[in-house]
Image (cartoon, rainbow, N blue to C red):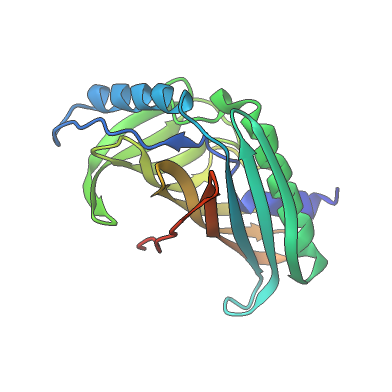
Length: 240
C-alpha cells in the first residue's frame, strides 16, 4: 500500500474493546484506585455479556478546504463477539483516496480485535491520573489523564471521561504515543461513546493530521444506524 494512504488510516484510532454498559455506582470523590478497579471490574463483566450488532457508519475525509469534503464513504459493519468484524461499503463518493483509507481503517479494526488486551484502557497499558470531574451529555464523569507505558501508535496520550455510574468511557481525546510513520505527524483525535440498547459503542470521531506532501487532513466519522437482535437503536448526537 502507498505509505501516504497507510498513514492517513491513523486519522481513525484502532478500535477499542466494545463493551456493555454496566451500572456500578460509586460516590463522586472516589480515589483513583477505586475508579480503576471499578473500570476493570465492569470490563470483565461486560465481555461476558457481549452480543452481535450491526451499524451503518459514515466517513468524511477533508483536505485543505475544511467545509468541502474530498470523499464520503458509508459502510455496513457487523460485529460478532468476541473478535470478528465484517464490513461492506454501501456508498462511495469523491476521490478514491477516501475508499482506500476507509477499507484500511476497517481492516485495522478487525486486526486489533484479535489482540484487544494490547490497546485496551488498562493499567497494563497506561498510567492514569485523576484530573477532575465534569458533566457530559447529562452524565457526571471522572476525568482521567492517560500516560502510555510504551511508545505504541495504538496507545493514546491524552485523557478520558469516565461515566461515574457505569464506569464506561464517554469520551477519549489525545495523540498517539508514537507516530505511525514518517509520513504523518501532529495527529489529534477525539472519540465519543454512547449507550445504545445496552451496548456501549463508539458513535462519533473527529481526527486531524498533517500528512507530508498532502498537507492537513481531517477525518470525521459517526454512526447513522445501529441494530442489535433486529432492534434499531436511536443515535443521540453527542455534545462537543
